Image (tube, rainbow, N blue to C red; front, top):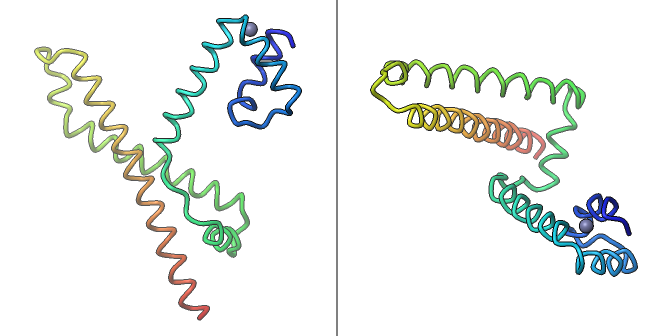
Length: 148
Ligand SMILES: [Zn+2]
């Protein structure tokens, strides 16, 4: 297996989805290739981080109800995306207004300003994410009651 091939197969390798032969070949390469070993380490680290950031997914049957509505899939998806982007922009703008004075104060170090902006952005995204989940779950519960 070439260096390039190994690099391409890292995600499969880490997920344990390589065939036994591929896996053996890859491990042989890894033994002699420091850079690929480091690449795998980086990949694992990144995956762990993403794992921690992800909100827990509602069970599958909930999503089925979610998608089988009056609107088709794409419309809904687009709607949610527009809603999210809009809400994030508004929330962030509100937050920006709140801290505007502090941001324009030359006595405050730039690092603190950036940190504050990051917190604002992060909060906006989290809020929208939770809000979206709540909206969806509540709607779904109502739908279930109607069906009963
Ligand atoms: Zn390599």
